[in-house]
Amino acid sequence: MAKNFSMYGLPEEVIFCTKCVMSNQRPQSVVEFKNSNNQKSGLNIDKNSCVCDACNYNETKKKINWEKRERELIELLEKYRKSSGYDCVVPGSGGKDSAFTAHVLKYKYGMNPLTVTWAPHMYTDIGWQNFDNWIKVGGFDNILFSPNGKVHRLLTKLAFKNLLHPFQPFIIGQKIIGPLIALKFNIPLIFYGENQAEYGNAVEENANPQMDSKFFSQKNNSEIILGGEKLSNILNKFNFKLNDFEPYIAPKINDLMEKKIEQRYLGYYLKWDPQECYYYAAKNTGFRPNTERTEGSYSKYSSIDDKIDPFHYFLTHIKFGLGRASYDAAQEIRNEKITRDEGINLVKKYDSEFPNKYFREFLEYIDINEKDFFSTLDSFRSPHLWKKDKDEWKLLQKIY
Ligand SMILES: [Zn+2]
Image (cartoon, rainbow, N blue to C red):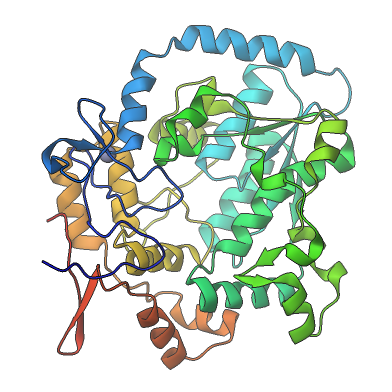
């Protein structure tokens, strides 16, 4: 049987993990599911024994000697702790994970972190309250960096139009802000929270406590791509100067190396459990969950600070068949908060829900009309995932 072709190099055959609800369509990850006997998946793969990398990593996590890892952390911190001035940078929003990271580093391990925040596109009320509490109740110094709104909105629009990924400029900024501040203030250590291996990036990423430095590889400014377009093209097409894009141009790896700036993540040293981070942040930094569940999911406490967040996940549902409930449920199944069957039901109920609440604001923010929004969205539906039935788009492969 001829298969429908897939866009953006996604695997043509959709395979779901048998332990959680993730599929092999999740990008930026090791999408080769492994058989239970750890054979890399081949053509005649037994779908009934596929396990995703995040679930495999979860098993690895159980075998890690966490006491030994904590001793490694204490040794590392001994090396950097200062009695005056900042000794580490903690980038974050004041959400549960960064709130936890900054708080244990300062109040359990006696460090003096400078927290830095790359502002969301549009703060939600609860997001702003949690950020404010992080600083005032949690007790931290913080630099809130807000990029030039005209530039940021343009890049967000381009990223939506070119990649159906309006969150991309935020993600880039968020990656850059820590190293940028560390360089400016001469702070030699940057601490992040959990590692992406928790969510399905290469397991190997967690065998090393240092952050991947590929992102900071040397590039000429003319080769930099933002929002799916070359920076040189953006400068030709729009009325901006190179200087305007300063916050999106990553510091060079050589500069980081010269100043001996280390990037670490706490998830290597301490066993990461998002729900435990939530309880910790609620107790120590005044973190509050939302009063209502997030659109597209059932959860109330993760990624709630940006009005664009629900669109990010809704659009991953369009591109990869994986919406927010899929990501939330996969994580909670792994951490044994819910069963796989419960997870499947939640995905069925919420994954494809359209984020209505901030729709008008989102359209206004990226300056496009509703018609444009939906036609762009439809042009990103890969034929191996979606089929139009009369007037309705149907997802071909579902876990339920
Ligand atoms: Zn899995």
